[in-house]
Length: 299
Image (cartoon, rainbow, N blue to C red; front, side):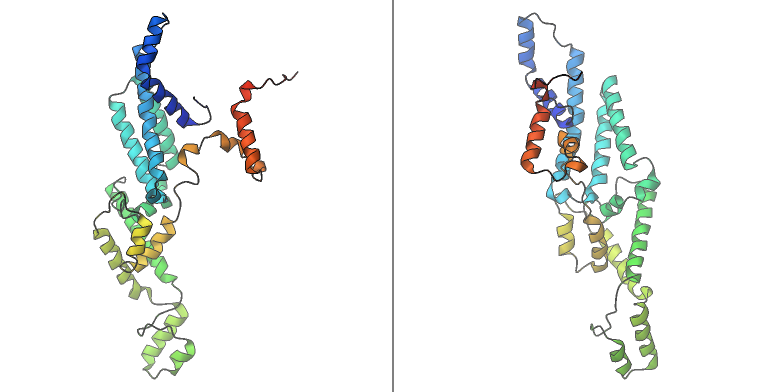
């Protein structure tokens, strides 16, 4: 059954219709009823093919290793590429349908405006995802801009690091530093470190080396969970790991993708958020069976 407020029901309905096409044709032939034309069946097949691409994307984003926002832009880019291949052999109406979806997706994700796209945290998150760090969905010059942005973020991270670990590996207080029997130059350097934080020029080379080593790492399989990967490699890239965590913890979506346009979204409005589950079930039941109720018409 096709539900207007839930797009995935359209896919299920059309797919079911195609699955029993032979039975429909047989019944219509026996009943002498006007059958659907070949063009109509082809349009139905095109519709299913397009919606299946979107459905596959929703399944992809629901998998545990793809819950981070780092998977969103590669997924959107994959959908757009699939639409391009589909349009090559599609009908005029099918191409128009695909083009409308493409335009809306590009508008929503700023895929056309490269400046806005590069400003999105999702792009930086994709760089920190060991599966998509090559950023194949961007042009070469845009990849360089993301790389420069990451270097800038690393520099800011180094500037704001609290406290200082000295060579001994133990954080010293002002009193301990003053009591040390060392040369005045070393004492001044340590005092300045305690006051202002460690000189970023002393930290940045190590962070830069971690960045270069991370880029040189082979790309991971699609089944890799980026959060698990960084947990396992934190000791190799400590500076990068802290920065990656800030981006990879951003979720790709707040709800299951196929429910984004469901009827429940309209029912659970802001003024109804305190409703108990049983009342919500009643409201949804009434909503889906409203046409069966014999309600008095308003005068």
